[in-house]
Image (cartoon, rainbow, N blue to C red):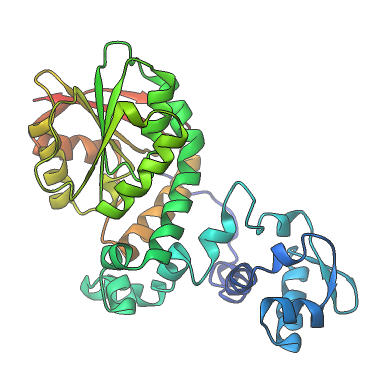
Length: 336
């Protein structure tokens, strides 16, 4: 990996003022309230439950940073950047940034990253008093917000995964850590002869039934609520592990792959679908995600070499790697 030469404004990189201002506007739902047109700050504050003077000062800062516009003194409206903070925007950016939602709350653990770097203590645990996954298991709003962001992220990529791999000889697919069933639903819709199994935590697996039913594929699919570190349902000749391994340290990721190897049919395949830094342009995003995983869950992003080592440790070998997008790839694994 090389670095890009040129001057760097370190003070801009270290700025916390603007990121927090954007997140506060997202949390208050300002963009949704302004969807029908500009409003005076007093009216806007009343609608979003904020203090008029404080909200005005926050929005003026954002206007100067190119988010929102001040159409006349103390009257604010949307611009192109602010449109992305609306709840119905396909990028679900508001859900991601909402300080009372799943990932927004998780990002509040970043001030504890210093302790992680110094001692190895988990930043989220230090901030919240419990593990990220405990919050995910026990807080419905946190879980719903997290699942919504993950589902939105998966929709376009799911179509690419289905298109880039040959499913003609596959009979039964198990999606391990399948979330809301976005990938499995896309796959079963596109390949009518397939049957599927989705494995995830009980609450998420139950919610996935609704998503699979909406796609009209529920009759060809079963869901299994439980941990993917326990023995997995058998019968699949292909097992998908999509954007799951990076959430875990090497020991747990290796155990997950071993469970897949135990459950898959003889001569079956395990498909790891993960981000890969194929191109230097992706490295900044790769390292950003790596620090997020370190902060949230003690997980990590892995290069191709590190993924191959993990697969060997689980008693398998990499048969081939199929690029899916500029960032993701399908790593096809077979018995070693």
